[in-house]
Image (cartoon, rainbow, N blue to C red; front, top):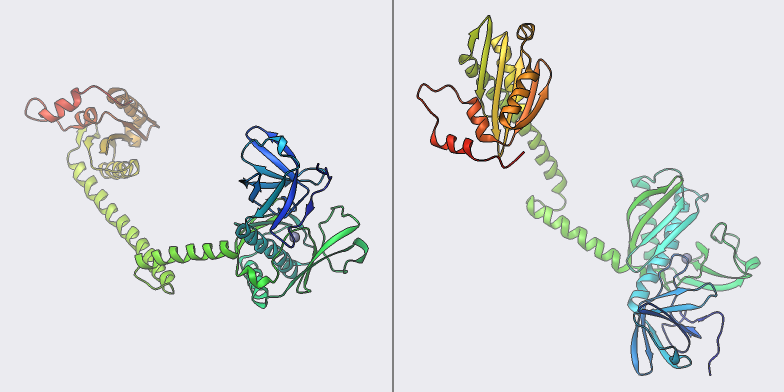
Length: 432
Ligand SMILES: [Zn+2]
């Protein structure tokens, strides 16, 4: 014989272990949901995660993975196997995972402290819009139009930690909706029953709340804000950790700082200064590098100019140069053409597995019918690559490095090419 009750009697405010009667087994797929007449398992509600733990049923220990509510107010205990409905009516010993529950309680009480500190700092026009409370952290959404400054967040975090150190007690009681103290905060828009539960922390934070809490807030240990962001227009979100999770975050930060500190050979207090010095040196070196590059380009351009040939009042130059980027190739070409005056310059370069080529035409050369774009397009066709540009400047690339070397090789007085170049040029194209 068993009694089918509508609402599960929740014992979890005062205990985490209880004996209960299994009154229903709901099955779906490879899972079942167990319903007991009473339970210490908190069912996911008001943002607080459901409890997990174990049930001793019929001589077996069964893991309870999660607990949720159904619309009738029954606590559904999720198990990862299909259980036989014939178990209905049997007695069970229920045990909540106490460590996890404890961490959830710390986070829930921390949410109330955070809410209090946010309203103290940003004004009492601020309201909770949502929350997620687990053993690993909290997300708290609230109405606020603008981002909360880093300074305000630091202050809020400090206020919460000072309250935790003060270690006030948490009082919970049920009372008539009309009897609650004046400054008690409820969820705006939520419809409450005639009897409500008040969670009063140290007299400074009073909320209507059905969640589970620590007994004194010193148990929270520490509180750390991880970040603040926007979730929708007019809604901000604070993410934070408390208890063990806050310790873990602090330990991870310390470890990261220790690594940086060791790499910089500086104490934690000096790392920022050391890092700034390193950045400054980096900027100085980049400047130096730019100057040196400019000099190399100027020297290269001057040397190239010597090899130019003159025809019809224009200078013509075609050469393979050392350049690591198209920007470098362009700079060398522009500088060379400027040195030559009026003419046409075609340059090739090899960077890794890629070949680059570019053409440059002066105004007089363009006037005489030359064009950089046409030269590069013709080169691209010849070298199995791609390229384009306008009359003054055009650039292209190819993976056929051998063909490029060959095209830009200086005319040799001796007949034939070197064996290496010949074999490279003859190798079949494997990139396009
Ligand atoms: Zn609450």
